[in-house]
Image (cartoon, rainbow, N blue to C red):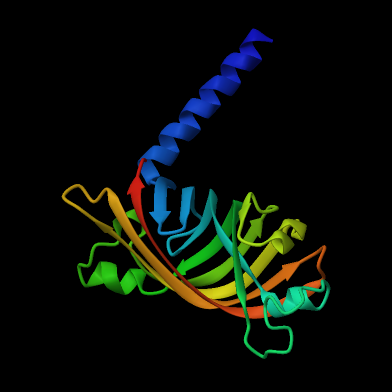
Amino acid sequence: MKKLIALCSLFCLAANISVAQRKLLQSSFNISPLDAHAAAEFSLSENSTLYTAIGFGYGSVNGLHLNKYYDQGLQYGENSDIAVPQIFLAPYLNIQYRNYVFRRRENREGYYTGSNSGLYTGARLKMQTAPVLFMHDEERLIKQSYMLGAMFGWQKAVGTKRRFLLNAHTGVTAHSNYNLSFFGYKAMLYGSVGYIVK
């Protein structure tokens, strides 16, 4: 048993050294005006990564969707065509597949591509729990929200030791909430500043 434990420990140590040498993992803390998250970006190949983040931040639903299921009177203009955004704050899990589209060309032309810097395309799945902080009582009824979408983005490491990350992406996302049974498309626009831990 001791030999097995020692062998497993040796294997884990070798794997960690290998990961550190090949830069297969980049971890960071990131903030934006209404969001904070810890992220780990795993290299899948030379040009693609899997970006995973756990955080706490904003989500939104459309007031017109809520009007389909709950009587809100005239408070939100029930007879109006104006969509009333309703913002809440909740914990979330965000998983992104990123393909860095010009990495080989940027390497060839001498651009810095370390710390996963560059332009990327990909897909995102974001799962948000029930709201912790909300603006209206109707949002208390939300249990979990799911967002799935395609995106195009840019990430850049900056600073004297390139420890800071600038990140921005845009795209289209499909948004659903299982207990309210609504589904809709939304534009996605996001930016953050991060600090590379490893």
